[in-house]
Image (tube, rainbow, N blue to C red; front, side, top):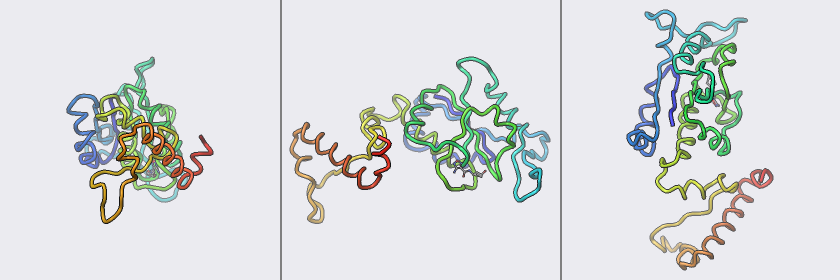
Length: 229
Ligand code: 4FV
């Protein structure tokens, strides 16, 4: 799966995308994450200016349409047909990112992520955006961290990225429930025991306990999910 990320702060991505699963999956060519500096498509090469004051006045700056449009063009987003990259703009106005939306986006072969900054991007470029996505109802300094969240959550669903596919299938939200509790050695810690069924080897019993646990926790912590379910 290919991700092209358009940002004014490319260095922000060094850490999250070079470590752990995402780092390994890029080395293994299961993922190709390419970070692009939007300033490379600025009008004036000297100042690399890509933002300007908002029409109608008001605080802050707005990212201009032209550099974003040029970048999308160079990244193939203006192509017609099936293989065209899917363009996602991260913004608080977007559809809230859920496991379901991650599963949908993970079906794509090539995704372009536009990271907003300042007050956002010129609305006229939205005609070339396929999907606006928000990671939650709060305002961040930029779309970079939302882009990292989306790449991480979607990449996990790309076959082979997560070592054991089972751990992707049986987890929070994929089963429509929160995850059950997890325990590991030692069997007794500070006098606290692990539920006996988990030490029993009775796989049917264990699966039953985990299902019941997941239901109980979901009812307790996220009853809204049960309603949706
Ligand atoms: C955001 C979010 C977010 C808004 C102004 C960037 C900032 C600045 N993006 N989910 N919540 N973006 O707060 O996706 O341009």
